[in-house]
Amino acid sequence: MDLNKWKRFKRSGAYRRKVNKKYCELAQKPLESLQVLTGSGEVGTSSSHDGSVQPKSESSTENLEQTDSLSEMPESESESDEEKMEYEKNLQLRKEIKIWAMKFNLSHAAYNELSVILNNRFQNILPKDARTLLQTTRQEIQITALGTGHYWHNGLKKQLTQVFEHAGVPLPNNISLNINIDGLPLYKSSRQQFWPILCSIFEIPSLPPLVIGIYAGDSKPLNLDAFLDPMISELNDLFTSGFKLSLQPTGIDTTAPVKVRAFICDSPARALIKGVVNFNGKHGCLKCTVLGEYSQLSRTVTFLRSDCPKRNDKDFRSKKDEEHHKIDSPLLKLNIDMVDDIPVCDSLHLIDLGVMKRLLMGWRDGNIGKYLTKWCSRDIEKVNKFLSTCLMPKEIHRAVRKVDVLAHWKGSEYRTFFYYLSIIILKDTLPTQAYYHFLHLFCAVTICSNEQHFKFLSIAEKLFEQFVEFFKNIYGKDYISSNIHNLTHIVDEVKKYGKLQSFNAYPFENKLHNFSQSGFVGSTSMMPSNEPLPGPSTKPSITEDIEEETDSLC
Image (cartoon, rainbow, N blue to C red; front, side, top):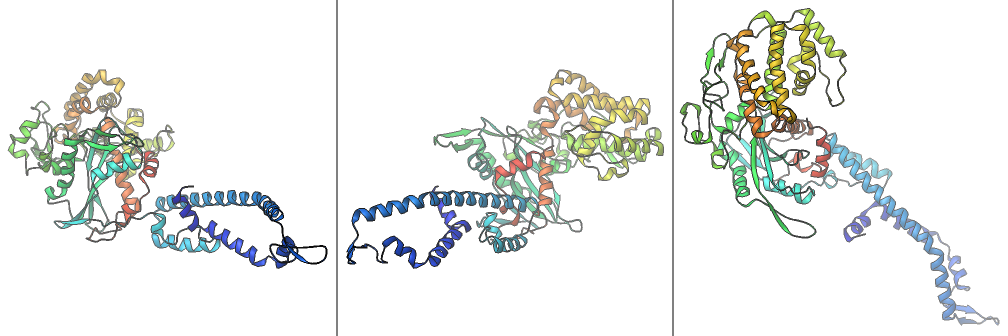
């Protein structure tokens, strides 16, 4: 047992109970037991045949000591083993209670009450204060005012060090970062919102996203430079010097080059960090120079052409298309491609919550183009019955609800419907022309979702183009929104990044969901203070975080 374990053991209840037990045994032991050992009540003397008291011989004293030690040795060893086992059980209990408290977001006050109850029954089995068990940091949290809100920078290098040095995750040869920026409302009845900056490491897909920084305010960050500059400064240092790590136990320093693989965001966040017009603007396409037209019928900007020249990094930095730009983005300070490194074909927002949701809403309500594809009540009942009775594969963790509650479907429900259920039920509920039109989209997305099908990418590109072109005939040209137009850019991004699942926002959305469930959201207003933030300071270690969040990744 090392020194730290010995110190913890001395403070534990098992050690104190041992001391109390020994003290009680000594206090209750009669004096006659000592006289039996000495023969007359005096240590070091013995009685002769004539009744005189003589000093005890050294040999007899040694024999007595050896006899006592031999008689006591088995008992002390067994007691020591029992105490060690009890100590290990107490440590395991503390660990389990810590995980339980974090899993169910137990407040510190509730834990303190629980510790009092358990310590009354089992003395000193738990720390009295929750901050001791949860290892709450006492470091000062630097929160800076940023416009109408506040910003907390956690640090990219700090997170990488925690992952590779303290958590023991093997360092890959290269570190490719996927960065996500998105908004998260705090309350339903308030304008307060969070804007976390998250990043994941492409080479370690099982690692949950890391928190670089968080902005909190009444609106999105208005001062984009102040919001992104801390992250950009760290990224430039990592681009230049790489990430340095001292390998244990050899102590050899190693360096891994770092690069930004992609900024994975939804449409509003992409426009925000690039400093360009929004996705529903006439110059809103981030990949090509198509000019949108406003439709009075659909009340949105439509993009009818798909053969316009592509944008590139050189033209973007020189502002060749001036009406595309609003402000100078802080990302221009990074050595990245401002067009190719910010993909628009995130499958969560483009396909699941984009095209698939729009089509289902249009089929159910008849609010997309012509009424040829509108479901009647009999069709809706047939779809609902199919969704209720269909048995899903084991890899599907969320059941698909009825189409009556489409507005409340999660992205994973739209994904399940698209990949597994659509081609079965739509054959009986859509006109033949509309069904085969949907198959163009299904086949093209399926090709882009599996690397074994990449030899058919040229076919997928033609299928996407035909889907967009025929969309005008079936649903009307007034409904060629930015999501429909962006389908024509999927193949280019799949060729750069790989299959669609390798650059979607599902892991980041899971992390944001954990924020909302952990009490971090809504528990603090991010006002300047030297007190530790309750959320990050009470999180489990990064290794526990990996084990808990890996199963939730979609």
